Image: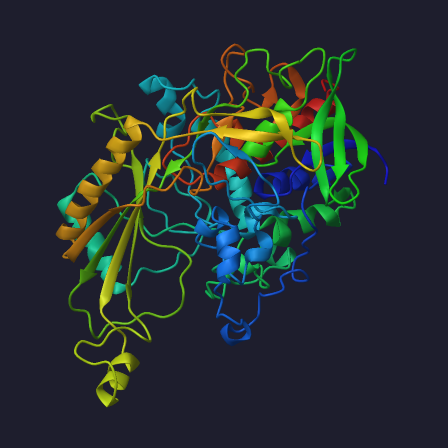
Length: 562
């Protein structure tokens, strides 16, 4: 392999795939580094078309595997059909100064093979929030800066949804939306009639409901609503780096993909005053190789991106690349998923639905949107779904015989589930650092994680459980039950921060184009760059920010500024 390229991208997940696509399309010879194994679309989805009876435990994992992997076993998508796409606990250890469930997928495509695919634009209130409410630092960009890039990535990725006209949840470039079932529609009407400040809309997701020409050119097809997404989709029905951006980049002839490449650190050239390349350890042989490029994109996923930059030391940056202000690794944030509610819904015995829809009705945040009005900062997004019990449900008074058989042949009663997605406030005490004594098998210091909830998170949780119960009651639900999972941070898999953007080099690491203030040919565009978390899902914003930064890098290279 050559060792000199125009650009190097570290990480092949959602943001890394987009960086590779944009850079290769514009003619840059690009090296895409992935620490995990090769996963090629279609070829390397071993369970994608298997039937339930072809799994010895019908998709469940053996008890031994669950006991050996208590962290990843908590993830909803970890099962016998998908465990080959998840990092096992013992293979990649880290240090939990406080409980933290770090869910990872080390392979080409990263967690883009495993994500839940909810895609909403952030609103102007999300980008303005930190400055207005006085937490974190001011975002150096606004909604207007990112809106064209939202459109850019949405048209290529394929996002389903409705034009709802909400300022709290801006509309996207949509494919046709999935449909709510009758109970969800009736709940929508009743909730919105009772609460004028709350808007229930159908969920938006990265699934092709009606493929356009650009999707067919990618070799992708319509989502089949199989609900087997974590196995890898042979139809390319949902967006992943494997089915979309990486093959697109490869078609240009400008992409070199190198899996099994553990990035040790970024090389800084003191004389030139910029980064010159990366050090890579072969995952199997442990041999170290150096690769060089004019531009480097760090997209290793939030915590690993922090780890790589912290480990990139030099005489100029003894505490990590670009870390003059000692803020690298600090202000980590995430989403609060602890609160859920369950309920039943009487009636609707003659109403049915078909298929396994990949999304659910959602409600954008209604707390502290236009002004501070609660005793906590920010708020939460709400999701709910309604469904009927299927085969094997309880038949009252029967446990065997003809009546039992007839009862289980009919769909069961309706149940309702509601959950929160709460914004957490970035804090300097929520941070990651490198352990001074322990290293992994590739000679890289272990990451130490110190991230926790605070009083603001507890207040948001309490408000959601109270308001959620009130909304379900207004919708006609019965037997409403609330639950606090008390799960550790990390299980939301929405970690953000540590290398935040900002206007001032004294209080941030990146500028408005995602360049390190102190090393402008290094870009960070994954979750690590985020100033705050919003209440919306983050992946669509990662894509848009990456496309925007990559095109800026291309323009700067043309001007010879990098």
